[in-house]
Length: 135
Image (cartoon, rainbow, N blue to C red; front, side, top):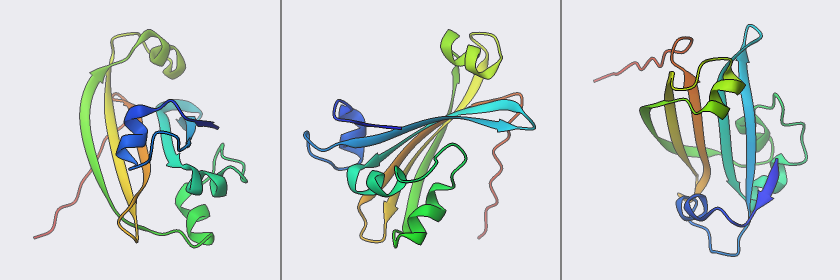
């Protein structure tokens, strides 16, 4: 986990000014000791200062935030398909060019301000995204 100031798109999505820092946490997610996803989460510095005090390897971010009085109100997700780069394939134990499912999420706090931007790339052979809809 590192604080960055050079993330133009992420700062824009998080509604931050050019000089504000963003905490970036990159993790490989496993299921049954097998890599299934690459996760990259970006947080404004005010949220990052809370998270950085914890061991983030297996941390549940939202639980940590709630314990510190930060609650999520809503989030928007976008799911698309793309091919794994050589680097991504190496981390996930697959071949370059294999299909991945990409999920992008922008989460908002109770004040309506963005507090998280996450991009997760899932192995499509090991991951399904299920949605239950109600009317």
